[in-house]
Image (cartoon, rainbow, N blue to C red; front, side, top):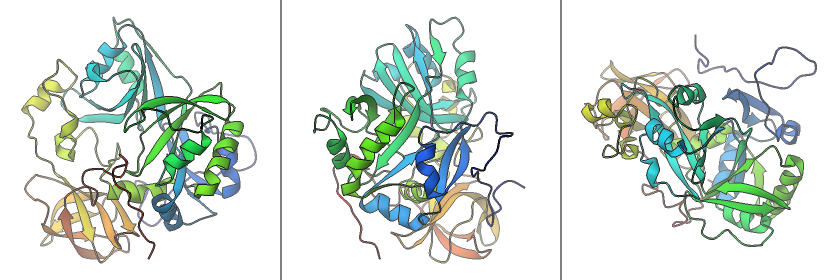
Length: 395
């Protein structure tokens, strides 16, 4: 049986003593989180907190929506440096990497030769011949090394850890934390900047996994993480900033239509089948998977689920008149929408938003539900771009 069965799950906690935990990596803020009672999943062999004993998932969700929340992630940055860095990344990703300017980020989606999805993440172009790729969970390093044969490039692990500051107060916190007292300029959506935070220069990006206003900071080996966190914590306190876990963020990312590699898509799905076709530049030169994607159907079979009667259970059947037509890949109860929400990955492209379905729920029941278009709201992603201020009231 795969974890989880909907009733239990397996998370990590710290305990006294030495023993078998080889290959697992604590992030630099592990000791900061320890007093909060963290429970971790393993992501890229790194600990990432799912929840904490000192607050509920719903409290974390509202902190994110109304003030600001920090997640110390398990994303794994790889460094690509050398004259052929751009050439290799353009080969590995479906987007045209030659168009990514220095100081900008891009969404990096990698496919196998048959068009199936390998992994996704954020590409940072730090210099003309130097990139970081903050990847989702998966073995991308070996894939990149295998396809770099004959190229003048070094692919290395820079030992960088990514943290997110997300929520309506996120940029106010950045302004307060910056030693200049100002926001970087320019610092639009998907921009990169280097800022001095408490006397330490830190790479930051206008990105995140929540579709809220936010930014991410990259802790490098030369940083003093305790000093950096103390500085950020002091700047964020007046704005209600707190550390929270992945469970709270998961609700918001489902509302926003953000996908998770390995569960919402994998090697059996093409970008088109999971509504990521907009990130495929078929008019660029060769990239891995291009030939297959040129022949692929461009219709999606991934849709949202609205369920008033319960919370969709991951891996549960989705049916019409008792006949299975797909599976649930993500599920949660939205405190804002007041209903169960999730993703439906259908077996075929035959069913569209508006279709009435039956879905298995966490309480063991089968409930009536509806397929809907993603995202559930903020269709143009105006909130993370700073074009819309949307701070909902807590019921």
